Length: 111
Image: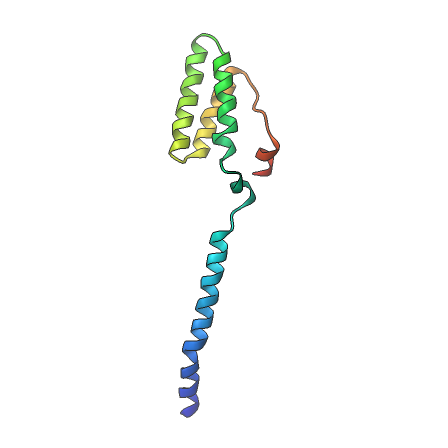
């Protein structure tokens, strides 16, 4: 019976070590960021948005209004934090303008 009491007394120390290690690991994981996130902004809401805006200004007629509408919607989605849906809007504007998306090195690195 005395062995069980001494083992029970060591449990809080062992638990504290495990809990401290888990807390330290969680802090380490939270402080590190992926390489693509260190650039400051997402390609879809910066580079792709600029491409779509430029392409929408180059289109004439009714297509220009539609392309600009896609760009405005994409920018609003970026402000809301929905980069994926925004990229779809920007790519639709590029397609409507008949312009191919220009892929940069930073975009390829983020894939």
